[in-house]
Image (cartoon, rainbow, N blue to C red; front, side, top):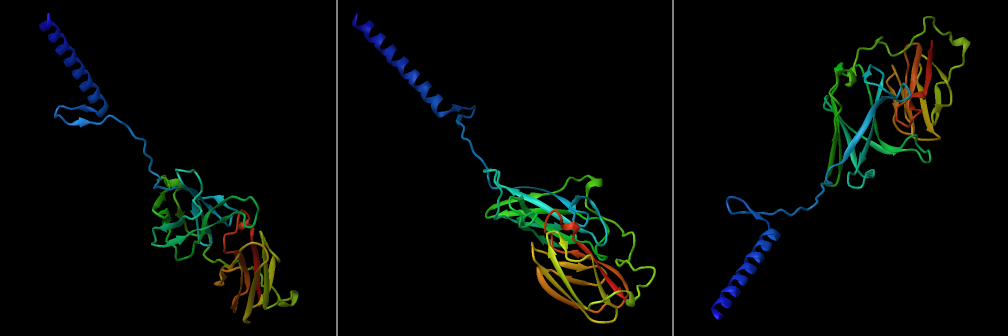
Length: 277
């Protein structure tokens, strides 16, 4: 009797040992054919090292209209956003740059658009003027964003109709000389051109100066951040308040534009400088 009892106890202990061993294997993982343990536990991980970069490309001279074809005298504006994928919040401290196939790198600026408008959206922008030296054809570009150890990149779709393309100008001359010369006796010229800029207009539609005499352009930005460029005369002021001197030699009409992207109405900021004999 005692012998049968001992055999029963031994069998019971052996069964318990096998059960505990099986439970232990389930907890620590299973073994493959080589005898190595495969850990079946899972751990959620997230990679927040990247920056989501998105945006578009517009013509500032046409009132910030989406466009892919540009010519001499146009200003290309990139408008980009940088989002932290972990928080889905805008990364205001990020540094964004546009890299062109010409080798040029454009630093983007973060701010409200329209500028100085409460509640206006904020994003990164930079403007690029197409000149006679800009090569025609497809201009490849990509945008990079960095913030600490986080990085991101934007590249446009490789679809030919929507790729950035520089085309030949319809007319080579950027000045719009009048067919009939403007007689100086008919108007009053002023070699001191005082231009006052606000959002989004200049104080006058036309300014008159005399050919062959030195002229001074004074820019004052009373609202927003602006600059000016006079096409065909190589005159530019790229700061809110500044002065430039030049001597016009050829009579005609020359377009004045805002040279610093300042918001949704930027493309509407134009005036005319009339040079008379």
